[in-house]
Amino acid sequence: MHGTMPLLTALNLRKTYVKFANRIEVLRGVDLDVAEGEFLSVIGNSGSGKSTMLHLLGTLDQPDDGTIHLEGRRIDNLPAQERDQLRNHTFGFIFQFYHLLPELNLLENVLMPAMITHSVWSWWLNRRELHKAALEMLDKVGLSHRLKHRPKELSGGEMQRAAIARALINRPRVLLADEPTGNLDTANGQHIMQLLRDLNQREGLTIVMVTHNLDLVHETDRVVRLLDGRVELPEKISLPAFATAGAGK
Image 1 (spheres, rainbow, N blue to C red):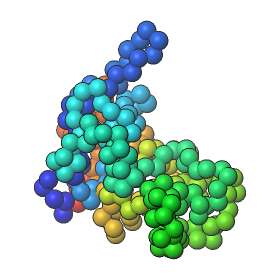
Image 2: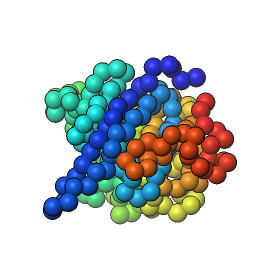
Image 3: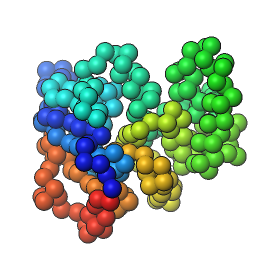
Image 4: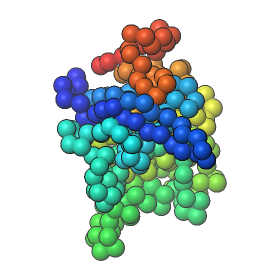
């Protein structure tokens, strides 16, 4: 069962982008609660603000108005250094386009967030433990046989699994996934979804996943839809029966 206090809360989030002379209102007052241990899907048409909302929740960007709270503590207005620490330790990110560094092998790519987090001296002292953690993470996503391969030698599904391992190397509490299966065929997409569901169920990882693919949402606990820059009321969301039958644990 999820706790009664939300792990992550967004209140009245607003975000506008200016392109040339045009002002584009992307978010127009988003309210959202995410429970600890929840696997939440966020759906909506292209341009509805799904990715923008995810970036705000993970402090990759800041809202024009509104607030974001982690366990009751406001985080959207923290100094840049503290937001950096949140992104290194509390939030993990996976994206549609992997963002693996082509010059590094798979093991090095997964270790990169840990290398960034530690000073040179701290890295030297902890390198064996961190190396072991990366190996365990790669084994968990089924890539222990690919340690020395570079991204160009991997399939799309393997690159996305590597990106998940990299996102988890610092043991985040919340995984923010932006169209994690968008570049994959059906079989690889299902494999990634099963992996995410296993992480959620077995390790209690909180996941917020943005997707436009309704075939995926039956794997998650709850579905919210963004419409016209706001979260649509649950009773107005019309989804196939399989998409809502498993809502909530």
